[in-house]
Length: 86
Image 1 (tube, rainbow, N blue to C red):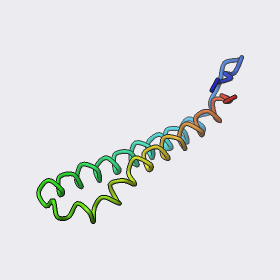
Image 2 (cartoon, rainbow, N blue to C red):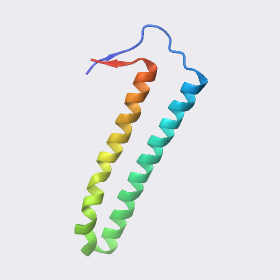
Image 3 (cartoon, rainbow, N blue to C red):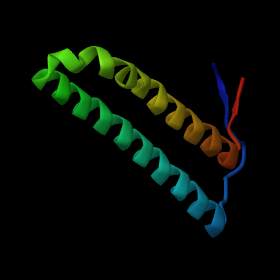
Image 4 (spheres, rainbow, N blue to C red):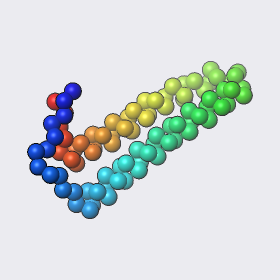
C-alpha cells in the first residue's frame, strides 16, 4: 500500500495538536492496559496452570485490542496530516 503525502507543509492549530496528543495518549493507555493484562495473565498461569483454560480467551483478545487502538490512532493521524492511502 502506498501513501500519498501532502505536497505542501501541514499546519496544525493548537486545538488540533491537543486533540491529536489526546488520541496518542489514549492509544498509549490502551496498549499499556492490554500489555498489563497479558503480563498479569501469564503470571497467573505460571503459578496456577489449572487456570490457563479459563484465562486464555481474555489473553487472546489483547493483540486485537492493541492492533485496533493503533489502527484508530493511525487513521486519525493520517486524516489530520492529509495523508492518503492508495
